Image (cartoon, rainbow, N blue to C red; front, side):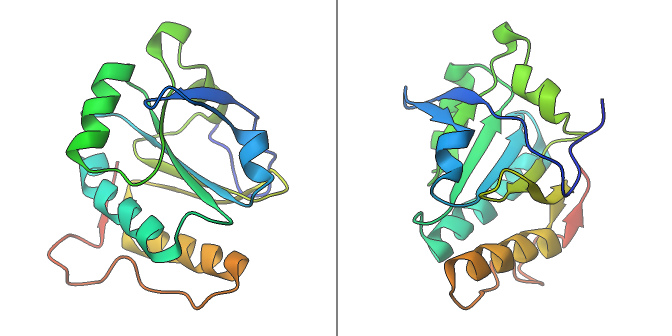
Length: 166
């Protein structure tokens, strides 16, 4: 398998969140685009990315688009991770017990891998690792969808590297 590329239809999925709710891609896309970020809780590059994901929701709110982090770890470990990073967005679990069905369908080459999926279900953006340029580009796309002015969510020279591979 190869990771989903821009322009392809994203496979639909439903996963359980650490909050006990069910999260369905097709239902989410009825409300706007979805940023799905695949992570592992033991990934230091994911740790670097998490605060910037919080900034996306702080900057653009949670109306008209959604951000879900897709954890490749179990519920308990994922819940602790979300608490440690004070996640301001749903964290859903692609459970290893189920054989990582969603991860197999999306085939992220590294963690983190980010897929911005448009309301039509097509992948609009795909990136891997930590990249301030990617995070800002995603922010610009979200701002465009919402009809608001884009903001910089990942400042250069903020003490973190501009890029780190996953």
